Length: 332
Image (cartoon, rainbow, N blue to C red; front, side, top):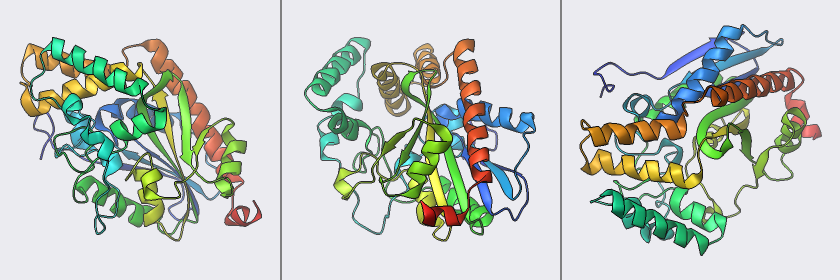
């Protein structure tokens, strides 16, 4: 397996601070490969800033969780697997997304002339209007394990990138007492706005603690049942499951780019191109350009908003970690 130009590809780890720090801020990028340009930019800014670290606090950056998708300009990996749907227990029965079945032909067409895509998008938007937001979101984006060439395919076994991440966590973080994890993504929400998102129940201490650090966040309760989960197999949950002796506070920093229907259209086009189209063609290159720009807009204003917000969030996280101890978990 190699990059788009035949080069070797890697997932990189950067560490700054004491090797035995009990508190670590982890910032990961490129879980969805094509979204990695934004993550790379905010990580590079942090490295260049030479930010001072509180005592007993370290920073770990994981660059290009999905290096294949990053290089080949795909959200998914070489097996069409969305890594943020791959961190599930494959020893149990695979989750079933029955609602996705009804949408697969629209999301994963074999033939796709422009007029057919217009019709498909109109039908998808019509179906969206008949559902509440969460039902539609789970159907399209909740992950599925039935259609290997479909969108949001979670795979049928742990992918090598998942195993690589689990190895990184075990090597660098298993002795830490507290880990704050921020996974950087793009493509959801108002353009240029970086929203912090986290799954936590009202009685979990990190909900109140992070609210004090960051202010407004999008916090969703953990599902009481598997079928209530809007996302299955996301990486942040995988970190919690892997680091059983560490207090993990995982969240996502999600930057908005284009309206949801524009992003979804670009994903459908790219999925069709990689399975049925011709990559090395004018049409293929135009699809790739559209995919790039729905996840990394060609806008200096957007880039500036991204970098300013990242600097703010990372500074708040470090300041919060400086005052945080495992005892805080018990007092909250």
